[in-house]
Length: 533
Image (cartoon, rainbow, N blue to C red):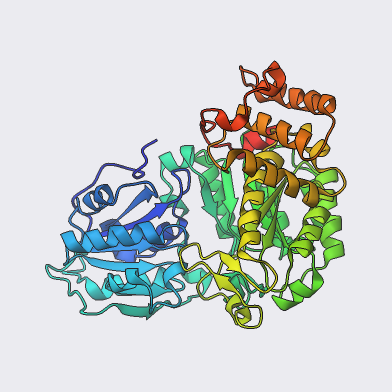
């Protein structure tokens, strides 16, 4: 795929260009499509150009300016602010009269110390659909009602960046953008959709804590849009609703809609509240076949004191029961989250949450490191819990009064190795032998050994990983060699690899860290990882 953008064709008629740097090509910029869809008469004068993080700023700027736009808008997020700053700096150097408008969560708060804001002309904070449209209508003029709108010859560039507080209209005033997904998007990319916006919960590590509640879109209109997407061939829908199962009546209607259109290639992703799974919703979930449904369940911590400290309401008993039910009584794929570094949570406390979650056997446990999202209420704990964050994006915790910098570094390695071994499905037979009754303690030993052997967490081939795990389990976990070889051989047989690792070929004289390091080609897709589980 082209790493730069969705389309390399640039029509010279566009006066407005909306752009962002996506993490990968498969991602699509949902927010930009909302902005374009709500421009009214100026929609036809607007083009969306999407790039990826590895795009060269020179190439990005060249393509952005190819249509000689008068306004370029950028979506700024925690994962792309560093790279986008370089793009904006170069764009203003090459074309200082081009107006730059910034929006997105990364520039919606704490603007004073952000270099990218000083390079821009306008910043829209919060919701952007109405406010960006209002700004464009202010900057541009309409010659007559019988002619399409066009930009004036000279759009005034402000002397200083202007901060515009985004207006939050009612959802029935916002035009849904799904028709702007191109045929290429439908065929090759994840399509983001939302049946509701906002969140009623106040978890302080999350920007959604600033929302007053959750607002549903008109359900019939939303399902009409989903029907059109489905008729165009869309089969991979990722719902970005923070609490999909909050309003169960709507959840049931949405799931029934897709159940009525079930096919082998349909895939749905929902983020659900772990302690809210009434029987009617369970009955619906149980109807979905394997490989069609994925739930993302944020646990973050099972420690009640930490939960209360960060304003997280969660019935742990119900959450455990529901996770157990999803795993044992449904075909849904279960992705769960924990956060390390929360205020007042020690390494041992985190380990208890990890063990409790491992015992429930979700398909994946994503171990995340606490990040300080700009504007999130978590900063109120900075002084009492001595929170220290990395000043560079993504602003991960460095230390606090419970965990040291070394602890955080260790847990970063733990998280990466767990993803390679515990989440990937490539060690299905070996993993139970490795973790046994105390998963956190066992995997901690494994983590230290893997890093001591390799000095790396990335660019490790699967064959090399087999050898590293074998050495660590035999030498540091003191596991029986024969039993180890049996399960590793089973995982090797399931891997599809042609050449055997040294531990299975009998050549154990050469240490794994002497091998040439190569990364497994490609990115594991959800469907492949699910199949392995």
